[in-house]
Length: 344
Picture 1 (tube, helix red, strand yellow):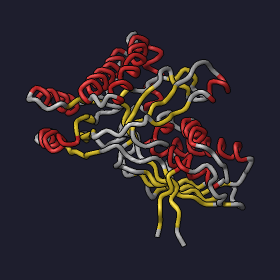
Picture 2: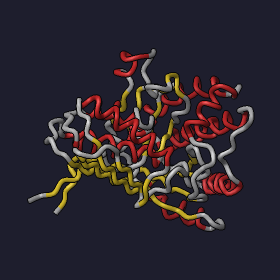
Picture 3: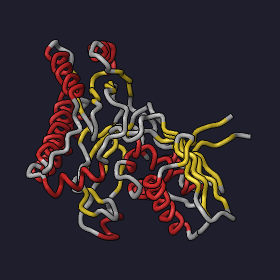
Picture 4: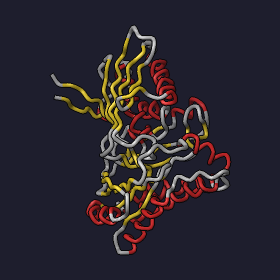
């Protein structure tokens, strides 16, 4: 029988040459968009998200003492060159932290569409950070594990935790700034849900990393958006603490649309929104006008997540499913990343 061990309650993981971790994607309600330090992945602004209870990534890392090459399998196939390089760079970081040199076999299964703007890199690198650090015998507390996951993918630091999570961007540059850049959970349980309208499951043509860099350097709307995001974060924390879904929804929708406006204002423009995305946005407005509090948020992709009360999920989902070629998934606040262990 296998059990999942929540990393939030354990800082003394048993040294093992193999470990399997499970992590879930998160949807940002106040977005992370843009880095002030590319090497350390330090964000321009702090952000806040909800970890989902759907679309888990499961990653097994096994140390191979006599191998001269890391083996990287993603969804049953050898990873492409770009993905492999990114994962190997991250594994090199873990090896340096552990003062070890062995190569490993990585076997990762994503259940979320990869590269489609649904945070597959967040769950992917959160699971990889947990599994690799455990396999190499590192004893990391959750803050340190969050900082490690961030080095693979910024938003992965939030998927280390369950529920509602804030990523403190910190200030400055270099090692001291690295220490102050981490995620932590907000102590709140809310009966909220995200209805995800899947309109495109294909990988996007422009990666988030490239799009962030391009937006930051060319969009005249980027700096105003980043400044507004700081205020959005403060108001969002209050809304969550007060269980104010309407306030949280308004902030999330404004923040997301502002980010996409900055993308469209980049030179040349980056357009993640598709005609189907806009149809979903129109339908959300119609649902809200009919009296159901529902608010849209969109990460770097075409797919739309709709924040609503759990009791309103059937109504919201039914309205979205009336649209052609729109498929819905319901997500509730999900669990923290966990090491999967076998019981004797």
